[in-house]
Length: 170
Image (cartoon, rainbow, N blue to C red; front, top):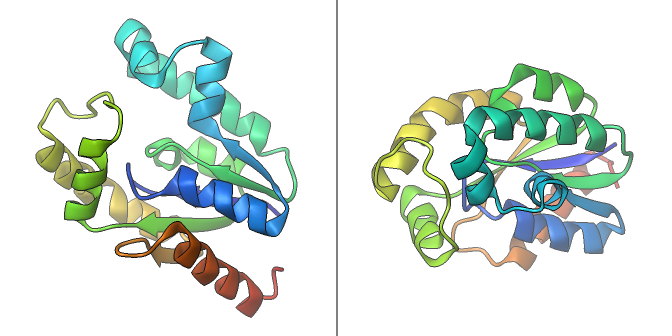
């Protein structure tokens, strides 16, 4: 069974995924990083040159590839699970939704490398619009919902591990 980490931008999917894979001795896949390697370009470059539709097509292919793994930790791009085919491809995995409040995500987004706009709005308005659109879908998919606000990566991983133990998954 794969462990999937998903959620909005800047909630800690990659950081938590790396730590969780180390802790559980599972291989780690970050779908955005795989796309960047396959394209030899950054996500912003791909979006600027070829657009969101092209990116989502590449993302779907990567998700089909990593879904064939077993006992992996997989970090998904922020919008990956808005596509029902991606959800279907990943069936049988444990879906862990990582959440953070608006201020936390905005602060993380501003200190990280530039990210391509999803809505052509400023960061706060973009996050709000995306939250309204995606969170109901994400909460419906999630097996576990984990808040990352004010927690270190180690604390988030410990909370996930406790949930996995409770469910007898590790």
